[in-house]
Image 1 (cartoon, helix red, strand yellow):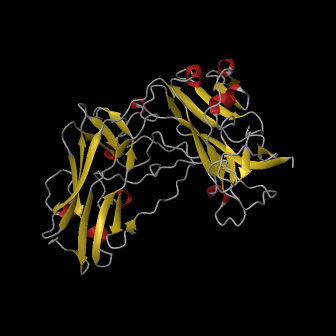
Image 2: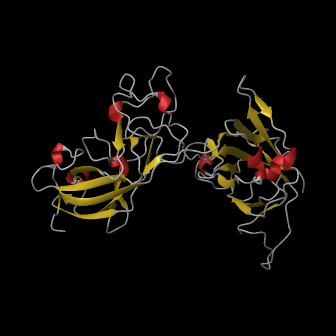
Image 3: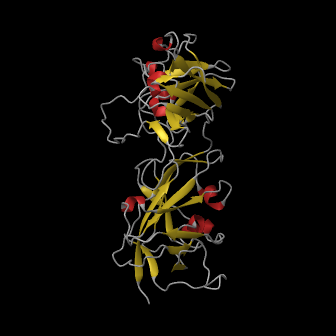
Length: 402
């Protein structure tokens, strides 16, 4: 049997920046989806990655992929000479399994098999890339370069006797289009990394001790959830706690994978009058199921050029070294609508834009953080904690005897 089998192919970069220092691991991410009307086999499709477009350095050297560099003058994309990659050898063979479209119930966009190719900053490909330049990787043609594939529900190429097999289908795997999106990224010599912080959560009696304490936590007899964030570095750092967050996101084949591309208030936001449900998760201790968690809202990516995206002064807070920022709120306002029982409260990881040093009124322009402070092409400062607190609700109120 000869011919071609079309595979819907997507290519993207894990981050929009490749950090040549290696502090932020970088990869090219691929997505394969079986959508062809001619693909009627109910079995998974198993393919070998070695020598294909998934073997990025080898594929670039053999013309399966093309690397472009953007000219900073006219913004045109110019093909890069990759003769230095001609001697790159095939990487160790791996296998990727693509689920069948037969009887598929999910949307095709959710049916992609993904593969990540890590770029070694000490390798031949990275040595070609110039700091400050912008690059793009895309398919050279519809050829996916797959040398070996078969229909199988196994994870390796094995025969009926369980031994390694060299069998392969004669049909050629090709992309369903002549192009397959692209992986675009900027190269930087070294990214600034956020300082390390320690975030803790605990239950305590309500008391307006900190400058972050809310007025409704001082009610007599109420139980407070306390969040403290400690900057463990030797320098102050300013953190954006609400509004549009601009930093490096992890990307999947279509869009950012994390929940950080939202405008929700972070857990130490000083202006939030209610518990930050976007940063907390409540688990039913008896069943282990999520009892309360804010659903992720869709993010509108349309941009109005007239909107000022710079953070307002009240949207940022400074974390001084060694001085914890503390916030308390009445836990009852978070769980008051749940049925009686035992619950565990956990903190969800959330990223924040950040800047070195303190940014105050003197540094701001019209009450906003100036663009000259930068902070877009940086990894986020992560607010996260492994702490977990347990409460018991009785008659709709938190039992303080626990």
